[in-house]
Picture 1 (cartoon, rainbow, N blue to C red):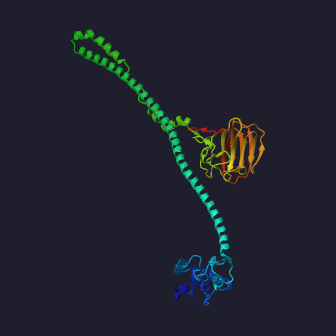
Picture 2 (tube, rainbow, N blue to C red):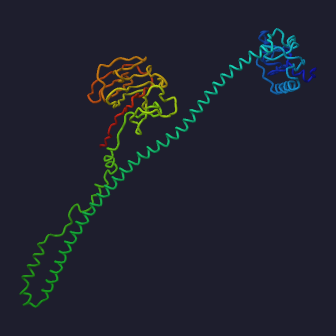
Picture 3 (tube, rainbow, N blue to C red):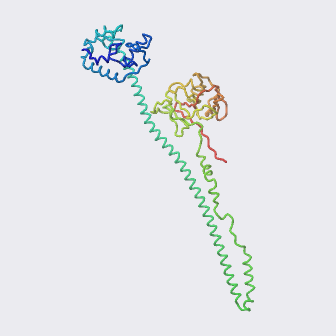
Amino acid sequence: KMASRSEKDLFCTICHEIFTDPVVLSCSHSFCQACIQSWWREKQMNECPVCKERPLSNPPISLALKNLCLAEKTKLSEGAEPGLCSQHNEKLKLFCLDHQQSVCVVCRDSKAHSNHRFRPIDEAAEEHREEVRESLTALREKLKLFEEAKGSCDQNAKHIKSQSRNTEKQIRDQIRKFHQLLQEEEEARIAALREEERQKSKAMREESEALSRIISDLSNTIRETEKQLKAESVSFLQSYKAALKTAEQRHLQEEPALSAGALLDVAKHLGNLSFNIWTQMKAAVCFSAVVLDPNTAHPELNPADNLSAATHGERLKLPDNPERFSWCRAVLGSDGFTSGSHSWEVEVGDGSGWEVGVVAESADRKGSVGSGSWRIGSDGAFLAFFPPGRSSVLSVKPPRRIRVHLDWERGKLSFSDADTDGHIHTFSHCFTEKLFPFFSIKKEKTLKILTKPVSASV
C-alpha cells in the first residue's frame, strides 16, 4: 500500500519511519527526537538535515504531530494482517535490535535500517521472553513485599484499636483510684467539720440555757425588790435588810462573757486545703525514673500496666513494627538520652537470666544488639558486654538490685549494688548518639524498675 501525501508528512526523513516523539525545528522541519539527536552527535554540529539552518539544541516535542503519528500507527496496525509488515505486507521474520521492532526482509534492506543488527524473530522473542520472565519474577517479589506490608499495616491497625481500649481502661482505673481517694478525703473532712459544728453548737446551747436561768433569777429578784419598795413603811423596814442582801448577792455574780473559740475554726478546714489533700495523697503517688516502652517489647515480654516492670512468659501475637525486638528478649525505656546525667534502679531478684544497661538508637532490634550496647547480665556467669559484641567476666556476686548511672557527656556508664552501694562495673566510651535504657529477661523471670515516693513540702 502506497502512503498518501498527507501520510508521507508523518515520516521522518532520517529513519524513514513514522515519527516517534517528533520535534519541530525553528525552520519548521520535523524529525524523530532520537533521530535528530543522533544526527547531531554524528555530525558534531547542530543543523537541520534538510535546509542546514542551525536551530535550538533542544527543540520541543510537537504534541499535535505526535498524536497524529500515534493515530496513524494504530490505523496501520489494525489494517495489517497478524504477522505481516504493515508497510510491505511481508511476513515479519526479523527483529531489529537497534529499533527494537519486528521487521520484514524488505525493511532490513531499506535505508531506515542500514547498518542495523538483526535477530531471527523466534530467537529475539525467546531472549525478550526471558527478560520479561525475570521482570515478572521481580514484580512477584515486589507484590509479595507489598502484600506483607499491607498485612502488617492491617495488623497494626487492629493492634492500635486494642492498645487504645487497654490504655483507656488503665487511664480510667488510675483516675478512678484518685477519685476514690479524693472522695474519702472529702468525707473525712466534712465529717470533721460537722463534728466540730455539733460540739460547739452543744456548748452554745448549754451556755445559753445557763444564761436563761440567771436571767430568770435576776428578773424574779427585781420584781420582789420592786414589790417591797411599794409596801408600807413598817412592812418595808421589817424586810428591807433581806431584800438588800439578796440584791447584793446577785451583784456578786460574774458578768456574762462569751468564751473564746466559740465559733468554727474555718481556717483549719479551708487553709491550704489543696496542699493538705495532696500531702495526704502522696502515699498513693510514686515516680519511676524509667518508663518501659511496650512498642519495643519482644513478644515474649509482657510489660506491667504501670510500665515499670516486665515478665517473661508466653509469646504474644504482636505487630513486628520496626521498634520491636524480634530476636533479643528485651524492652527499652520510653525516653532516650543525648545529654545529662541519669540514674535508675532495677530489681533483678535472685538467680540468672537477665541483662541491664543501655543501647544505642541505631542498634539492630531484629538481631544481636552486641555492636551497639553496653550492659551487664547474669546467665550462668556474671558478664559485662560491650561493642563490638565483646564480653568480660565480672568478679563480684550478682546483686538483687542494681543502680545504673549514665553520664552522657563524660562517657561513663556505671553499675552498682543498690543495697550496699558497692561498685560493680564502669564502661568508658565517647557516646555520639541517643541511648535508651535496656532490659532483657528470660526463663519466666520478672524484672522491676524501682519507683520513688513523691514528697510534698514547703
